[in-house]
Amino acid sequence: GELVDSHDWTPNWTSVAFYEDSGQTFLILLKRHTGRIDIHRMNSNGSVGARTYNADWSSGWTQVLPFAVLQPSGSRKWFLFLLKESNGIVHIQEMNANGTVGNRVTSYNWSAGWSSAAFLQEIGRTSLLMLKQSNGLIHVHQMNSDGTVGARTDTRNWSGGYTAMATHAPAVGTPYVLIHKSGSGDGHIHYFSGGALSSEIEPPTMMAANGAGMGPDSRADVDVLTPGDISALNKLAG
Image (cartoon, rainbow, N blue to C red; front, side, top):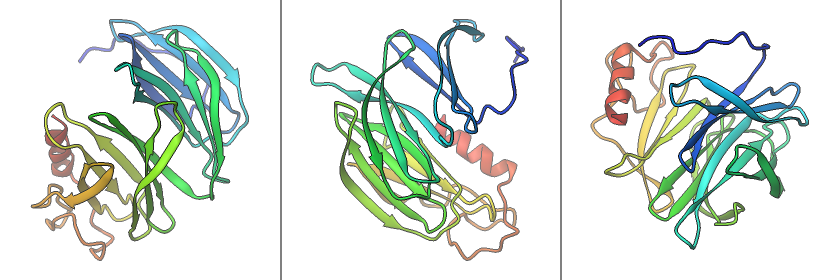
């Protein structure tokens, strides 16, 4: 489509995220190496609006993820999850409805090496998924209504090398999780139900460059995602 906005900002923004609260969409930008964070209100035409928040935090934040948790009243409350892969430090902050960062809810000092994190919402439940690229370890936790990390609901020990993890909760049907190895192109899509990963989608939805289904970790490293793979993912998300 047509270009609706452009900006010549300073370089080195390493994390970008959007979230919608009370009908208003916000853009979060963060620089890993300096800890600079900016939040902007998004205009209805898709352009970037006024800045609602800025701060200079400590450096090293590798994951910056807004997430919402269902409250006993039936409303949703937004929080901000921050993680440093280098040392496992986690901060969780409240998010205010006006696009500013509120009070810190809690902090954790976990083991280092958590390289990917994602949130997934099911009916009445928000789950946190965390992945270590180095060894394939996956932890899934249920989030409490106050924004703290609750009980672990699933653990997986898969092969190392997974560089990306994404979640999708369709309006109708079962949510699913995609994990992907950028080095080899291996990708797996699993259903997600009741706070846990479940069966892999079969037949394989993604195909490698050599025509093989995206399944076994032992496929040749020359296998990569093709335009057909991307088309299949877009079909799933549609």
